[in-house]
Image (cartoon, rainbow, N blue to C red; front, side, top):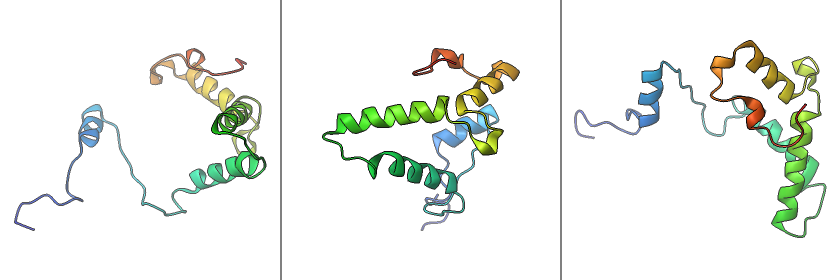
Length: 116
């Protein structure tokens, strides 16, 4: 590479510039490294076990409806052991109530499904 040329690793992206301007730390993870992407892997495995591998769908619409119902159940009704047996929705509401300025909008306005 010519001297002074910015290679792929040295290139500063617009997203990074915006993060810097706003004082936001932008961290990245290595591609296909399970020790940093474990939560994503567990979530994908859970979705596959609960829906894709457990049922036969006649069309993509049926799969989408079932996944939506599962996500609503998981978000609003399934308490998580590692989070003090609260649902993700309860955790988000608690975070909002303790620090509303950290949210761009009220979570209730964006909720899909049951409002507890």
